Amino acid sequence: SLSKGKIEFENVSFSYKGAVGDPVIKNFSFTCLPGQTVGIIGSTGAGKSSLIQLIPRFYDVTSGAIRVNDIDVKDWDVKELREKIAVVPQKNILFTGTVIENIRWGKEDATFEEIADASKVAEAHDFISAFPEGYETRLGQGGVNLSGGQKQRVSIARALVRKPEILILDDCTSAVDVATESRIKESLKRYAENTTCLLIAQRISSVMDADQIIVLENGEMVGYGHHEELLKSCKVYQEILQS
Ligand code: DUT
Image 1 (cartoon, rainbow, N blue to C red):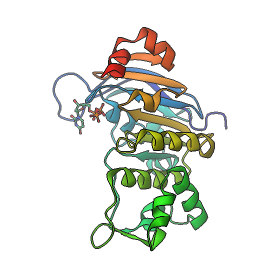
Image 2 (image 1 turned 120 degrees about the horizontal axis):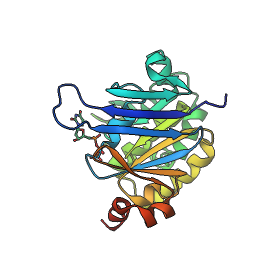
Image 3 (image 1 turned 30 degrees about the horizontal axis):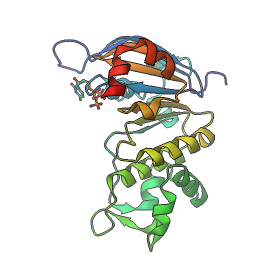
């Protein structure tokens, strides 16, 4: 349908339970159209992770509404909602087990071909294949210890194999070098052509070719537009570029 992968925030405010002081997200409104890639940038503590966690209802809005595919997330069956959305969290959550078990997690019926395809897009296939036991390599205790960037790439492959309608990457290429990150984004364009992507990042280079970029500061949207527009008009964006 035409609304597949559409996300709308309407006057969303959010405070963590029991927290005092200003809300973490303040009166945030935004529409992300199906298939768009939207970058979210802002300094540490700006509220980026909090914002995206409201979409799969890891937390609920304090006021306002979020709609996915034109339906309020509160009216979705939570399990169905979460099946549409893959979040690659900032801190990866690989477990002790083989590489293939880790990538297949959440999509138990994935074929080897699907797993290898997802891993290629995530720039993980080559280093996995170079292990003597390949995808059967054990990770963690008694097995191989991956680097931070390799763990992030395996986490991305895990999200891709689920073929979500909405893919949320929460600063999950921070340990991946810029050239590799750029190849991942290029491959993603083809692999996830019809997938709505939300891309949280610290570096401007990570979001500069997104369809739209949101600049978040203290829980508020202080800039919105393309890279070129923001360069001209958004002070916070210019500051992030220079930092
Ligand atoms: N916060 C809490 N409880 C939590 C998580 C965060 O009170 O469980 C606060 C910390 C901060 C604000 O919410 O003042 C926003 O944090 P968030 O992690 O959403 O910000 P970010 O933009 O994602 O920061 P970073 O780039 O450091 O991940």
